[in-house]
Image 1 (spheres, helix red, strand yellow):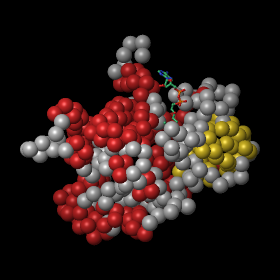
Image 2 (cartoon, rainbow, N blue to C red):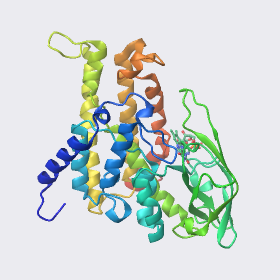
Image 3 (tube, protein in one colour):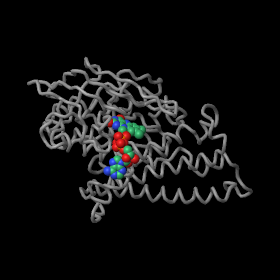
Length: 396
Ligand SMILES: Cc1cc2nc3c(=O)[nH]c(=O)nc-3n(C[C@H](O)[C@H](O)[C@H](O)COP(=O)(O)OP(=O)(O)OC[C@H]3O[C@@H](n4cnc5c(N)ncnc54)[C@H](O)[C@@H]3O)c2cc1C
């Protein structure tokens, strides 16, 4: 935005551009997981998905606030908010879902060197490379610093051996950001490093983990003498814990944001479509109506809280642990939303396949929402962080 352009001029410009450039198909509600565009080398995209990703990528609006030299849009936080509002108003789908944008990008912007930023960020913003997250291990989840995957120093490279678990979409990802132990003699938080490598490297293998929902985003990921060149080390050797924690604050804020993510139709309307309306057009179930009203008030308050967090972050005044509070509450809200949709849908909502699954209530989505309070650090762990770091409670 130029110095003389106001935010309202910018809004008008954004709206006109979106109207002209967002393909009509990309303004329809998503009906299946195939509608989510994750990008990557092997992405199978429909024509409109590809066009939408390309157009948004060219403007840098897949990563609106990243600097232009790294493939971002160079927008201020206020402009990015306007873009998000206008996209919502026109029902534009997100052009790209990406661990690179949500998690790795912010960490690279803070801890990466110039060569790493130039190599990776533009490819993330254009959706060319899909990333996965190699943090959890069979004996290191909540106690992540107990991780045991070893990276042996071999001069110009590391040799990585070990196993990760719950690696979402590892079988579809092109690259991994990974926590490894480079110093087993150091205190557990100090011996960890943060490295990047190609999932096509010799010695990397993945094995999907089947889930009750019938879908399996998870993998076990194995490393057997994987060579990782040292220029793929982010930050200092042994300094990976700081990078990991910073990345987690972004992951938690991102997961928290699902609490404010409204479907194209307000929850009350979705429920009324299922249950029916009374003579005055209201949802024909006073108990459910009250629960939905309460939910919508809480959701609005949460959206305002997210905005306030954005403003405080912009001013450098956000509490570094506040993302734990957002993650905790956002996860709870999203679970409540799915409980309400299931209540509205009744026994039809339990249908595993078919029409009901696409009309608001979906048993698969309901089950998936349960995982919100585990992924990115469990709710119990977030409550510990809130007690200790934000409330500074005695004994916490
Ligand atoms: C949908 C989803 C996607 C995920 N994607 C990824 C991914 O892409 N990459 C990745 O690396 N990992 C991923 N994970 C793993 C996730 O980060 C871990 O599951 C999570 O950190 C918890 O670790 P754990 O499963 O080992 O449970 P544990 O740490 O064994 O915890 C078991 C139980 O004990 C409780 N507990 C543990 N410690 C404490 C404590 N100090 N105080 C109170 N309660 C405690 C926990 O809250 C939990 O209820 C994903 C998980 C899910 C559900």
